[in-house]
Image (cartoon, rainbow, N blue to C red):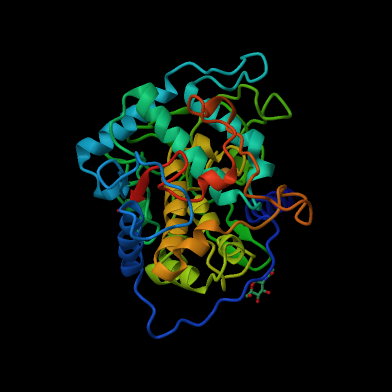
Length: 404
Ligand SMILES: *[C@@H]1O[C@H](CO)[C@@H](O)[C@H](O)[C@H]1NC(C)=O
Ligand SMILES: *[C@@H]1O[C@H](CO)[C@@H](O)[C@H](O)[C@H]1NC(C)=O
Ligand SMILES: [Cu+2]
């Protein structure tokens, strides 16, 4: 019985993450394909051409966004120790600032950080498996980066975790648990339930599963959710006192960081294949999700379940996991690389927008570039309700950043 409940919860949650994706062919690589490093370098070169006006991405760039002012987002492991501490200190600052939400409706939003979690929980059906999936998350990460800078004095930019860089993710600079990491794995809890990807594909339970007790987020208490838990029911995560998940449910941050995805499904070649084989934004967004087999890259889902745990494996509440932002910045970077690496495709790919507007109504109304996006109380001042078309380029609309 418990086993069935777990499997059903996992499958339901994976369908949630994947948005009920149908199959998408993986194309054969052509001999002249670049390497993943070359793709990243070409994307950056083309982004600088856009900034100096020698290449158009089809959007209207503000005159304030130039080569001299552009923010450069970096890989977490490429930051110096001091830069990493600046980053995690600013996250801790946000975790200690008061919420701006009405406490009566959102008793679990104890901090300004948790305002971001509430907004994601609330927006989940409108921003996953939809046309705006990449765009809304880009906007959301930028709002978070902006809050770290304006509300917590952070001087740097949002770092990303390059999925392909650490096959041994558990011992990587991101999760090794030292003071310069994003915190360690959860405490080992011994044998616990595997992660089921459809009927055949099983990701073995990882080496953690318990509370995070090392690094900057040691013994962090989370309060919101769960709403779509995927951890072993034997962990006895208490249900939220409110059906909507917004109640106060204090418990430890759990992780089950594992190498299953990074070792076999998130290698440089896997990332490259996904970029090269996606011919339009629809295919690109769909093939980032798992369809339940090993034949497709599952980069978005794989990143979440490389961390897993509570709330890392809960599609609604996952931003309460501090590493969420590094994963989703990499997703944003991966999209940027796909759009930018071929000079002749930059304009066309930047402007593409395709898909539904509600996860649970895949055949419902189509998303339009004019659709306004919602960030509620986490929008930077005067920056809420921007249309999707303002979120197409990382160097126009509200944005001015590139990835190095
Ligand atoms: C997933 O995609 C592969 C390759 O396109 C296909 O063979 C398989 O049937 C798909 N599985 C599901 C559950 O859609
Ligand atoms: C976290 O909790 C563990 C286990 O209770 C304890 O040993 C450790 O000292 C705590 N660490 C911090 C930084 O509070
Ligand atoms: Cu999300």
